[in-house]
Image 1 (tube, rainbow, N blue to C red):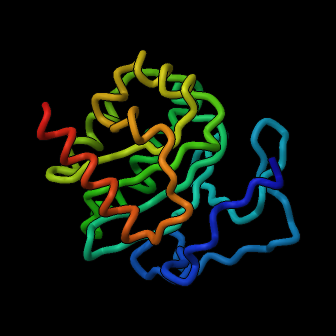
Image 2 (image 1 turned 90 degrees about the horizontal axis):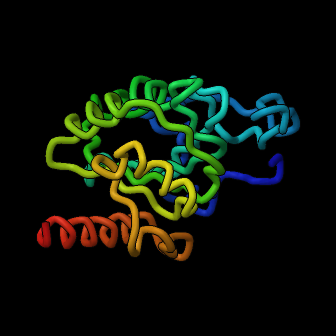
Length: 190
């Protein structure tokens, strides 16, 4: 797991440590020290701790005019033992909501498992976004199936084109526009 790095090709557009509105502003990384781990497996030092013992993240883009944040995730999303959604909601989503963010793109290809509990924090987060949306891109099939068991798909858009979305070859603004277009198309069919 130590070789899985957060996506850094958008650094010319956004760096989380330089974002005065972001939760990781001025954070310093020691690239040579691997101190964070998930179940005893060290992870790359550029992943950010947000309160969860098993799930880490990297804010790879935030645009306060488009009201959108793109977050890459790594690890195990465990609401059963660690209430990861509570940590995410309180330490990340609430922070960005106060800065006007209404749209969330969660990149989940490195989320290896999901263990659910209740959906209260998801519901609260969903209500907070008002006219916005929450999308999960490229989550593994078994993770999406587990999330569906706990009704998480009522709050986070998964499935269809979101399951195998080619995002690395796009600029972040273009990705945001494409995701929003797909969300609006889904809403118009509901």
